[in-house]
Image (cartoon, rainbow, N blue to C red; front, side, top):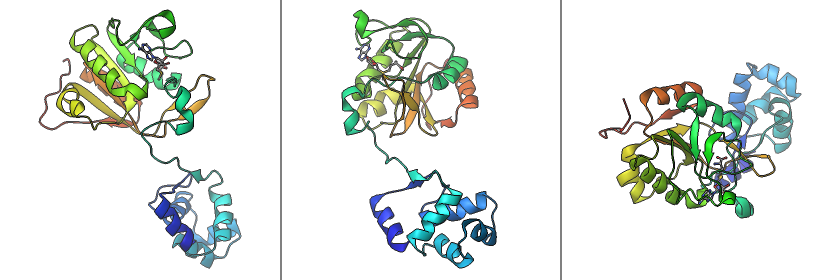
Length: 260
Ligand SMILES: C[S@@+](CC[C@H](N)C(=O)[O-])C[C@H]1O[C@@H](n2cnc3c(N)ncnc32)[C@H](O)[C@@H]1O
């Protein structure tokens, strides 16, 4: 176990499906406590000795014992996908065709209302919008003006900044009242800091979103996501926070441009 724990730490290799903890021994202990098992009960359940359970929880013991323990208390344990800010290499070909699942859209409709424009829509996408700007119809969300009250934007992440600039410009021009974007937490550009962040509200989502691919198969993002809104009301934001895990960021000193 000691060697395994050291190697895991060096490779930034974490297991999911066990419980919280900075290291595997800590996760094992937290799992046992979550299951309300004493050391003796755990030993009985796993048919390991009490001393072995104690050893595993403090980073000792053998890997064979660890596997037996995991099989009983965390049979679904698996590798946590490493944090990345892009879809994997193998997904490059269709990495921009990831559709927002209906479960994610439901709280958006409930909190912000019906979507008037999806400027980067797709025929296979479950997003319901009065107007869908579709490349296959000759539309272009980077050229055609957006319209209506609410635009929902899950853009091609490979051109994230271009789409955020476009969203900001369309909102500033008054073509749409409110824009809600679902985007990776990528906040390093000067433009984000100097311009966008002063106008936008940002909701940091807890957990990841299972986007759908063209075959309707769910695939989790290997990176963190945020909801970035322009022109959202305090009421809309509160409704969203009441439905979805996460929090709205507050920017000290900067006046938010919420509508009253
Ligand atoms: C990440 S998908 C999102 C689809 C849909 N908005 C959703 O949330 O399910 C982005 C889509 O934008 C479309 N797209 C790319 N460039 C576009 C453009 N200039 N105008 C309109 N759509 C575009 C692509 O076809 C792709 O399917």
